[in-house]
Image: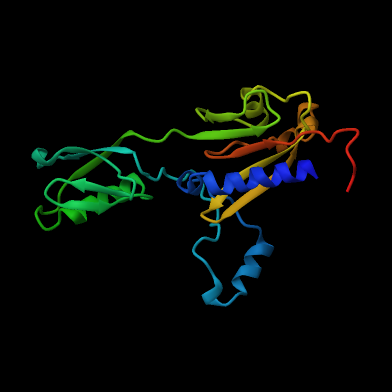
Length: 227
């Protein structure tokens, strides 16, 4: 019972605290059975929050606190560096507030061109990403060093656990990997890390994605009662 409560608490914490923007950049595929069921529902019941099919090599989508460098080839007096505000807007010189959160850089360029269409004729605009929120993963439960870690390179589940200090003595080797696939959708996988480390099913060693959370449960006590 204690393990079940701990698992439920971790899942609730994950749903409440994980930034939706980071998860939305790496959407997981829906299986065909689920997709068929959802398509059979009335149109009014469908939600825009349903997980979308995974895209290959998706472009980065800008988010709050990102810093953009905007240059105008023919109007350098309008060159500017802006930060995306918490509400997703940037304040542009001579234009005002423009919403850009969730857009890729090419989309931001088109948004800025439209914003200046009233004052500039067919402007040549370039947008560079000067600073952005670094990708990360979270490890909780029975690991040596629970916490948040930078995801600086391609990393598998077992490598992420090693970075978080490895398993404690009381850890189960069947762990849970959570991945957000929409504003209200989270994919949860139970992974048998022991078999992977023993050379079995090594292809199932999941690739970590930005914002993923690992939860390592505690082994049940030998004296605990079974419910």
